[in-house]
Amino acid sequence: MGKKINIKNLSTGFQSLIANGSHAIIGDEPPVNKGTGLGFSPEDLILSSIAMCKVATVR
Image (cartoon, rainbow, N blue to C red; front, side, top):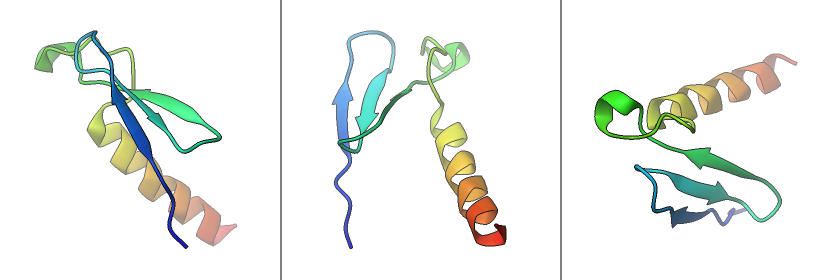
């Protein structure tokens, strides 16, 4: 079963609004990479998705 993920680029830093239709989060680069640091970095998003998968599997 496929999921549709929508990403909208915002005008501040490298911020993006990432949504799946029911929930949304902000992704951004840290200030060291010319972002604002006000959202999850790409690395944060990947690591958190792996951690969630592991937690769900163990549970």
